[in-house]
Image (cartoon, rainbow, N blue to C red):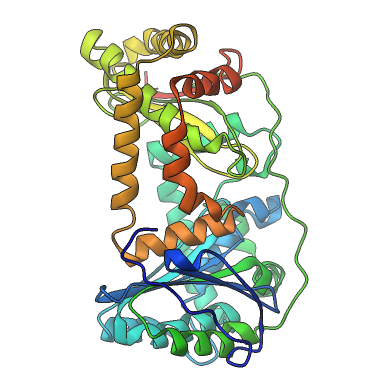
Length: 436
């Protein structure tokens, strides 16, 4: 995690009776605690920081929804700061603002995250507020009715946003069996008709301690925070865990889809399925994406932008998820170049497979990744998000081992990644073009 994180003292059972065991890498300044009720907490202390971040990850997202619940994870997120047992109404939001902090939440396919970024003397109150929000929400009917309109408007804006429509279709094309195909924004019909009882049932099913991770990062008093976590999140009653969603996706034939919408130029997502976040192949994914389309020195940028002038912009990246991640290429272009772009992308990937890459390309990609990784550990909120995400994915060791493992990767490893996961038959292209 870097030298700035200080050594931790192991927590004792006499201080927190709910603790079962401690895992993690204390030498790296990260202390991970597992409670009897199933909840996990991660403490990352940095006495040099002037601020701190408290984040709560709940393993509940669109992958956990059936068609009659489409959008409930997102709806619950909207309602979570609308009143709880000890912080009715908007008291929680006003408290954070009065302390000079920032409060927000987000919903993804695999989890929902609530967080408060605050100066160091507001950390304890932030823990209390988030604990009350996720453990004791009130879900007032009046707030449900008001927020229902807000969420439906968001859904409408989503449907009117070309990029959102493009990504939605892309996910549906790549994931045919896996719950990863589910839309996060959900269905306006579901949100219009869902009752308070149904919302409460969904909350009670998925907001259980064993599906929660609390991360405190930055400058804070360790003993006070440990004690407070035990008195709040640690007292949340242990509950059964619902059946995990099916996230495995079998290899299947790709699709070529062209949609038309309110765009001035062409937009396209090209991609194929890759490794799960918990397999060793995950360490080479960022390298492969960087060599292929990571910046102006990449294969795709040189060929499609510099040499052939087929695109206005192009880049590639890797989406890390359980089940099967996605290697994707995003391009913006003149619609007349659509076929030529698809052909050139295919040509560039196959050239890597058949002819390899240079050591210079590999070194440049490694340097870019190390730089990006360093910048992502500068702020407590980013550190909290990274640690919470990888703990949620079940691969917390990734954080400490990422750079060292990535450094071991060779030219052959990058070539073998494409050989293993790429096939022209399984690549999907989803394009959004201007209306004819």
